[in-house]
Amino acid sequence: MNGNEIIDRYMKGERDFRGLDLMAANLIGAELISANLSGSNLKEASLARAHLERCFIQEANLSGAFLYGTNLHYVKLKDSRLIEADLTKANLSGAHLAKADLMGAKLSGAILTWVTLFRANLPGVNLCGANLNGINLRSANLEKANLNWTNLSGARLSGANLRGAQLNGVKLDGAFLNGLQLEGIDFSSLELNQVKLSGAKLMGANLRGTSLRDSQLRFTCLDDANLERADLHGSNIRGGQFIQANLMQTNLEECDLRTADLSHTNLNLANLRGADLSNANLRGAYFWGANLDGANLRGADLRDASLRNAKLNGANLQDAILTGATLPDGRIHG
Image 1 (cartoon, rainbow, N blue to C red):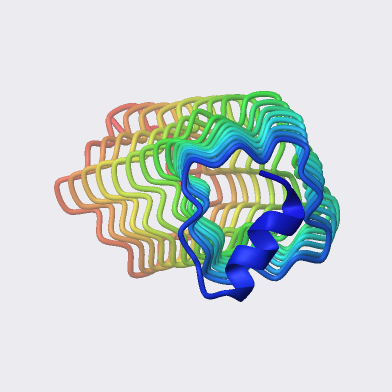
Image 2: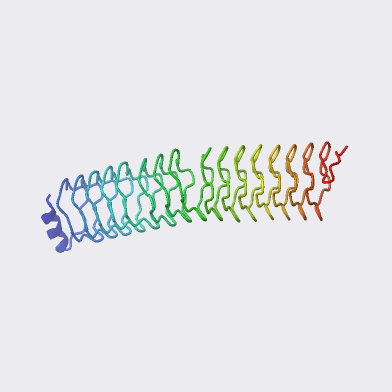
């Protein structure tokens, strides 16, 4: 079937075009709003500036299709193939592309707000500078993707593959990154306020100067990570792991650090005012000049820790283990 035939049938009121062979069809500027093209072959079809709002194009083949400036608002493209498709400046707002294959697709200038890309295949995709506010990328493959300067505020990225992804200047405020493997990632100086990183693996990550205020970092692993001068004010870090991490001059005021493992961690000059460190492992940690005023250290393990010149006004040290610890005045606790 050619482009003119389908347009003619649409004009006569037909909307069901499932399973058609429209390979290389010319549908430039066509208006097929709410049509059902599921299972159709649209490989290398020309659909530039077409109106496909609210269409069903599930399990279809759109590989190599030309979709420049196409209106795909709220379109259903679940399980479809868009390999090397040109979606430059296409409007995909609210579109559903769960499990779609977009390998090699061009998305420069595309509108992708509130798009669902659950388990979509996007290796090496270029989304530099894109506005992806609220996008659903759970379990998506974004390996080696270019996400530089991308707005991913409120995005759902739990379970996504971000290995080798470029993340310079990315905005992740309120994003869901729970359980991600982010070893060695460079998030330095970024705005990650209210981000969800519970259970994530960030060993050796660079978070120097990063803002993580009011974030969720429960049971997150940050061993050997650099969080110097980071701002985690009010964050929930219960059960977190920071073995040998650098938290020098870090703002941990009013943080929930219950049962966290901060053994042998550098907390020199850190702000821990009002933090809850009850039952935390602080063995061998350095708190030189740290502010622990009003902190809850009940049951904390502070063996061999250094608290030289630390402030402990109003701190709760009930049941804390201080054997071998260096106290604020320089004395070693017996």
